[in-house]
Length: 356
Image 1 (cartoon, rainbow, N blue to C red):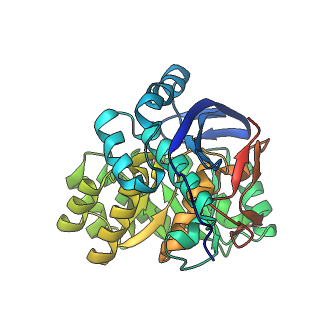
Image 2: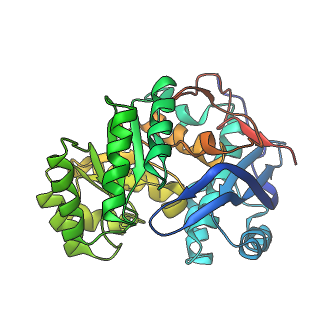
C-alpha cells in the first residue's frame, strides 16, 4: 500500500563533489580517466524525504555552482510535477545536460521515496534485476587477456571493450580478450574513433580472425550521419548510436533514416524524461534498447538500472562503472552479485544515499 505523502514541496537543493579513484586508468579513444570526479545532488522535501542524483564528468566550478543557483527556482516546487520541472530545467540550463540529469534524478528519487515505492516499480515494474556487461579499456593485450579471464571467472558473459585509437592494437587486444574468455559476447565501443571505412575494415579483419562482435557502438563521429548509416547498412552486426543519440530529436532522426539498429540511452545525456521519450521512440520504430552511463557511482548507475528494469526490454546493459571504482562511497541501493544487479531489496526510490 502506498504511503500517504502530505507535503512533497522541495525545501532544499544541495550539491557537493563526488570523487572516487578508479582501480586502473580508464582509457577510451577520446580520453583517459584516472579517477571519477562527479557531483552529488541532494534534494529534500517538506515531508522529510530525501532524493539523490549524480551529475557526471563536469568541471567542479560548473558542477557545484549550477545546482546551487537552481535552488531559488526549485525550492517550493512540487516534486510530483517532475515532468514539468524537467521542462523548466531544460529552459534554464540548455547547455548543461549532466546537471539537468542529476537534478531530475534527485527529484524523482525524493518523490518515489515520499510515496514509499521502489523506483523500478514506479517506472513500470517490468523486472527487478539486470545483468550488466563489464568493460575492458584500451590496454596492452596481456592485460586484456588477464582481465577477460578474471571476468569469466566472475560470471560475466558479455565483455565490452574500447576501440578506435589504433586499428592494429584493437585487433591484438580483441584476440587477447577472446583467448581469455572464449565464449563471451563482444561489444566494441569506438567512442567516435573511426571513419565508416575504418570501422568496416576492422570488422573484415576480425572476421578473418574468426571473431564476430555482437554489437558495434558509435563507430564514427557524432554528426557523421552518413557514415553512421553506412556502417549500420554494411556492418552485418547491430550498430548502436551513443554519442549520436543525445535527445529524443536525435532518436527520431536515427529511426527515420535507418542510421542504427540500437539506441544507447544514457541519462546523463538526455535526462530522465528524455530517456523515457527515447525508449518510446525506439520501441515504436522497432529499434533495440541499450542502457549505459558515464563513469558514475551507484547513484547514477542505480537510477539507470531502475529505469531499464522498470521499463523492460533492454537487450544491452552497460552499467558496470561502479565495479571499476577502487572505493565505493555509496550506501544502500541495489545489490550486485557478479554481473547481476538485484533491485528487489530496495524499499523506496533507488535506495542509495551518501554520507552528507
